[in-house]
Length: 116
Length: 114
Image 1 (cartoon, helix red, strand yellow):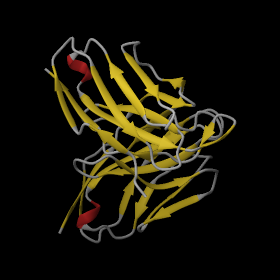
Image 2 (cartoon, chains in turn purple, green; image 1 turned 90 degrees about the vertical axis):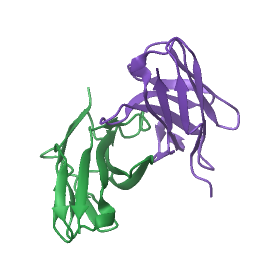
Image 3 (cartoon, chains in turn red, brown; image 1 turned 60 degrees about the vertical axis):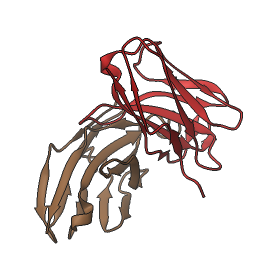
Image 4 (cartoon, chains in turn purple, brown; image 1 turned 120 degrees about the horizontal axis):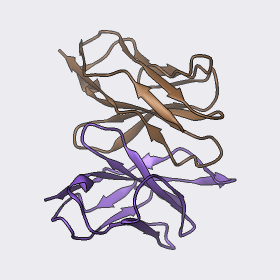
């Protein structure tokens, strides 16, 4: 059973550029959440997608956007990159259990984004 | 809002020593509580969880008990191994709603020396 996969593993961009990160959820999972983990800190919730719509959002600017596809895979897009966007971006998948809740989430290995 | 406070690290122990990593939380309602482990260069792995008061989560010799009265979820292991060296994160998520929206502590780095 494949777990959560993310691509690419590493990425280097310059300020002002745009980036797209990809995530494939664990088999059977329908909900994808994205987190930003700065060096030496815990992950910070960016947003969550369910049924191809953004369901919840953390305190991140509109430069951060996402998408979920019919096969439940997801993309995270960041526009107008800043140096402070350098971080490990983690994708987590889970299964909706009804009433807006989900079961335990499983994390992918992350994409390391460096903005120069 | 919700928050998680973890014992500051780094923590360095000798092999077979007893481990405690403290975690306290602030949340409305009755959150689910988690411990995740992150090995160098890898993503987070769920170590254990507890979903209601007095529940004990356990895995690989690690244990943590959901203490509602003290809003704590301390991680313990009776005898650590070198392979336990990693960063440990305490986290919570609201039960039933927004369960995927987790709040994490800043992590505690554990180094176990032979």
